[in-house]
Length: 387
Image (cartoon, rainbow, N blue to C red; front, side, top):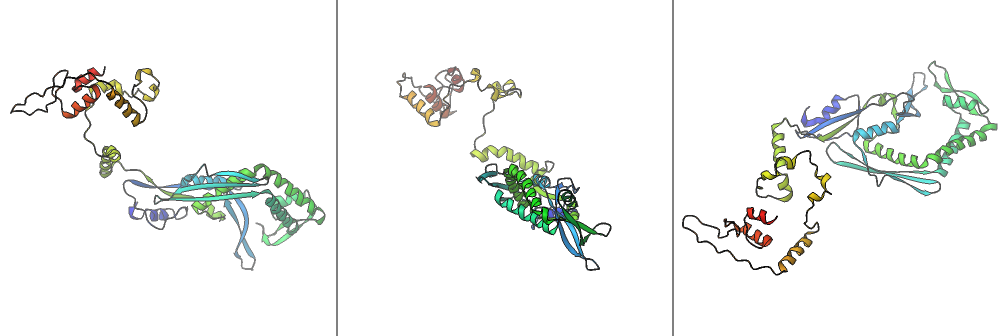
């Protein structure tokens, strides 16, 4: 892949795909980052659940001047959720909720974010309000229109003809696969009110049970559509093409010498980057090697084990300082200060010696042992004094 214009190569490689999250600027792909493409294929079968029909649109006219119609579809929840997973859309749990304003009104809210190919984030918030009173009015207008203008869906028209009086009519603008006009069913005036009320009752009964879920789902799906720029309707041919989502992830190529050197340097400098530069730590004593750091030992399992209980105060630094101050306020037994031994011309000495064994110690060890044990001690004698 040409790193100078990776997204352009993706578009040229997938010419028959619906490319989501397109970017006008190219992304420089270096050995530290990898551009990956996730592909989602929609199942365009009538009962798949990935898409649903939203009617027909006029696409033109034939040689005789008759209108040409094409079925259009919209992505359903299963397909939209697969696209959200491919794009890595995340929803904030605290702001993705549903509330009930009153007896007949539910409001769903959703707050989502997606990472763009350039590494930045795009956020979006949507709401979905369902008012049962408004929905009932919409259903009334819809079925009133169907009862007058006719029911054009074949399955719905056939079912209505078995329950309500009416007549079949030919649609001159639409023809079936045999070239004959399609038929639609018009409800008779005597059964029109009965048809409208029963249709409203059936749909409102279902809606009252699922109003809160529909409000929540509607808000989430609106966020997905907005973040990915999904159209409201697609033709069958468009949906048969797969959707592809390009993403850029941090995936170092460890075979690259530059990457290996940089990762090694970063690992060595991690402590220095956090806490500043420090001197080289002393070598670990052999007493702490081997079994003490065995991989079979889990320190979290031994938190309550009294064998590993420390007597140090697990409080703030101020409490520890107060404890040390109280120790120094107590009357301490007089300690005989060691006399500095004379120096020779050959070797210079620090002038500090261990009170236990007489070994020479440096100034830092002298001050530490004097504050900790009340007398100057070398590191070896400090271990014995701490027992």
